[in-house]
Every structure is written in structure tokens, then in C-alpha cells.
Length: 236
Length: 301
Image (cartoon, rainbow over all chains, first blue to last red; front, side):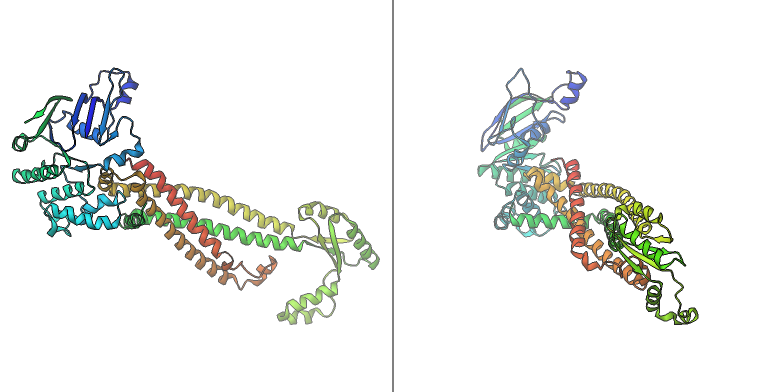
């Protein structure tokens, strides 16, 4: 579950304070939002609206402002991000699977090793890795390409490897940041369908996109961010 | 951490050396040179100290008596020497005995002795053992005040020369070594930075999938450690070869070694365990510390 209350994010706060300049606008302004377990949600917005900052906030890559005038709080998968120590950030991230626009696959590793990499990084036992990795790769329909390197795969296949990697750790939440940004329309539909199927099995899925056609086609919850504020939050 | 994870990280660290081979090679070379500097300085000072010790242990001063001194005056001088402070033992060394000893030492120069005849051309002397070598200077001044002394031969100057060389080598080595250690740190730090750049994407993915700081940094630490261990092994082998070759080369110079109270260099086997542990330990430590510093700087998790 994701729950944000009165969240503001301002970049370079320290520098602004040092210069005595308080006029810089926060990137996110008074964001309050709740995404329940099992939901399927799209976050849309123009470039610079604050979508990426919101995602970075959820994985604790940026921190929210601490303000005197409001009581801010963020809770992601049971972790209180306002008080989360640096040491516990990896534990939060293990509950989230991340899918990137540019796939972020390691070219020198084959499909199996790319997916296994995420489990190895979290100190998973070998026995579990050997069982889990082929299962998720099979789920993505890439069983026949398990020993191939990413450079030999199409864009859609690469993104499916990235989804398999995100899914390998059995996360409570999958965040996909522009997952169809580099794909043709047909493949884009395939990828969102795949994420929808994952959601139907109980995993919360949040997709950041600027492709309104996909949102219309799949429906579900839509959160529209404009100039750092939530302009619309509802079902379409 | 699980054993299988450690094995995985170890393999990644070893792979990093190959991926980043130019910088790894630079680190390896600079570390090896630093270690060789340390090693040869230690071996040199150790040998010099052994020689100084040998000369000091003899603690022997030879007092040559003026030619033509009467037996009575010789005996009187002997009494004076026995009564002098810091003198442990006095023994008379006759010119006949000295001549016989030289003849025995120089067996291949019989022709010269035939020419010299039976009469010793050498002076009578007293051999004195000194109690405290640090007070040698004042003892010599006292002895030089006695009558019928031609000259006094003491190892004092020789010890001073050896000590001087030793001090100079130690100081020069310390300065060069300090510079080399700084250079080693810089090179290792840059090697790690290059390695971090090479694996930027992997590090980013590791962050997103929830790898801990330690997990991300361990391969770099292992990479540094392995470079250190390899440098230590290379330095050990080169030191052994170099030291043994030098020992063999100078082994024929028996008279030089004899003057220093020894028959040759201390054998390398005497040092081998200390050298192996010291080299590998020091190199591993320098590179591991260098890597820890640089990952702290360059791996922002």
C-alpha cells in the first residue's frame, strides 16, 4: 500500500536555505494519495510535472520536505519513509519491483543471469534462484530465450526480461516508469497486458506514462499530475 | 551473508580486475615497486645491523706499542690499561704471534714471507675488550694519553660509517616509500573509480533491487584485495630472486665480509616467512583501505 499525506518535495533545499531564498517552488506540492494493495493505477502528466519525482519519492531516492505548517507522512508497503534510516532503504526496495523505460539490462549477462542478478543482490539462496528464475522467465514467455544476451532480443522481449527481473523477488508493488516509451504501439499493448495480468494475481501495479491511448484502452485508476499537484484522481 | 553470495561477489571482484585490466595493472606495478622498496630496505638494514652487531660484539681495541719499548715499559703499559675505566680484559699480543697468524692466514703468499725472513716486522700490541661500546670514545681518549703507544686501532669509526649508511638508507627509503604509498593510494582509488564507472549500470540496478551498501561495495573491496595479494606474491618472488642473486654475486668477497665479522648475507630463508606475511599482508591492507576510501567516495547508494 502507498499512502502519502501533504507531501512537498523541493530540490536543493539546503542551497536555497543557505542563500536565504525561499521563493523556489517545490516540485511536488501538497500531494495526498492512497493506492491500496492490489490496485492498478496509471500516473500521467506532462514532462516536468513531477511524475519522476513522485516515483523517486516512493523508492526513497529523494526525501520529502519537513515543514512546520503541515503534518507530512509517507508510507510504502509498511515502511514509514519520513523516518526510514539509510540502512533500511534496501529493505523497502525489496518490496518493490522496478521497470524502466530503457530496460536497464546488463548486456554482458544472458536473460537468466539478468533476472537472477536481482535475487543474488538480495542474498537469496542458490536453490531458490534456480527454481524461481526459470519460472518467472517462463511466465513472461521467454523460456526459449533464457540463454540469450539482451542484444539479441527485440525491445518488447527486453522489457519482458525487465518485468521478469522486477517480479523475481515477489514484490508487493511494481512501479513501471514509462515502460512503453521505447516500444511500438502493438508491443506497448502487450507489455501493459502483461502488467495487468500480474496485477490480477494480486500485485499492486503503478504505471507512469504519457500515452493516454493506453490508459483509455486498459482503464483503471488514473492520477494526473500537473505542475506538481494532483489535478485528477479517479477511475476511467 | 550466505556462502553462495560471498562466492558470487568474489567472482565479480575477480572479474573486475580483468574488465579493468589497464588500471589494475598500474595498481599492481606501483604496489609491487612499493613493496620491493620496503623489502630491500628492511633486508639491507637488517644485514647492516647484523654487521654492526658483529663488530660491536668483538668490542676489541688493538693498542700498538712503539718499536723499541723495553719489556718493563710494556708490562707497565699493560698494568695501566688494566686499570683504565671501561676496560674488561687486556691480553698481550706479541709481534711473533701476530706474524705467525698472518702467515697462517695468507698461505698463498709464502714468497713474501721468505723474503721477510724469520723476524717479525710487526709491532707488539695489547688486545683490549671494552665493557660498554657507547663509551668507546672517552676510553680511547684515556688510552691515547698513556706512554709508549704507537697507535690505537678501534672498530669505532667503522661502526660509525655503517650506522651512517644505515641511517641514510632508512631516511631515503622512508621518504620514497611515503611518496610511493601516496601514489599507491591515488592509483588504487582511480582504479576503483574506473571500475565503478564501468559498472555504473549494475550499481544502479543493484540499488533499485534492494542490495545493501555492503553488498554493492564488496566486489570492489575484493578486487583491491586480490590486486594486493598478487602484488605481494610478485614482490616476494622478485625479492627472493634478487636477494639470492646478490648473495651469490658477492659470496666470493670473503675478505669484505670477514672485515664485517661475517661470512656473507643473512640467508633469505631466515626472512622468508616474515617477508611472505609482511608483503602480502601490507599490500592487501594498502589496497583494501584504498578501495574502502574510494568506494565511500564514488559509490553513492
